[in-house]
View 1 (cartoon, one colour):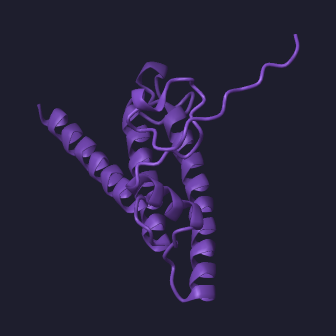
View 2 (cartoon, rainbow, N blue to C red):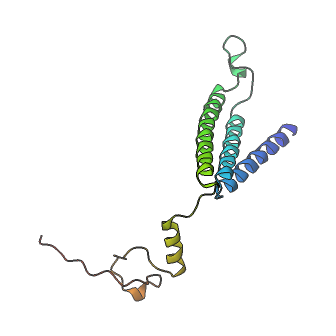
View 3 (tube, rainbow, N blue to C red):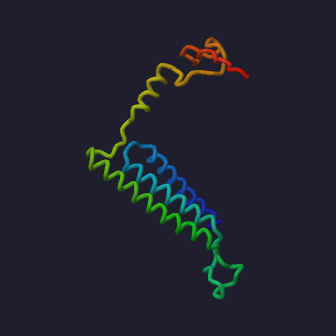
Length: 154
């Protein structure tokens, strides 16, 4: 019974780490995005470690093969730590460069984002509707219907 409680606490901790990481990842500040990547990486690493079989050291000749722990999750976590470290260094460099150039690490809206927000507010269709249905049948279509296609020979 005690082992089940420890696993439950561990998995709740993993869930909190990944949940906080996803929340931070959705922010506009690059430093918060960086912290979100780190939290998600650590949460996933813990999940991989707890997914493996526990036991004795996986060294042949030192312990019985049936009692050995699974070495694959440990190797995967070690690889994930290196990859997360590299990605963290990359995001840190981007964040520093953004702060150095603009004095702020917040990601601004680009022109396409503003255009999408404007069209959404006016219920416009972003592309011509070529399905052939009349505009009255589609309440979301505000633009004029596309001109009919000309059929070529053949």
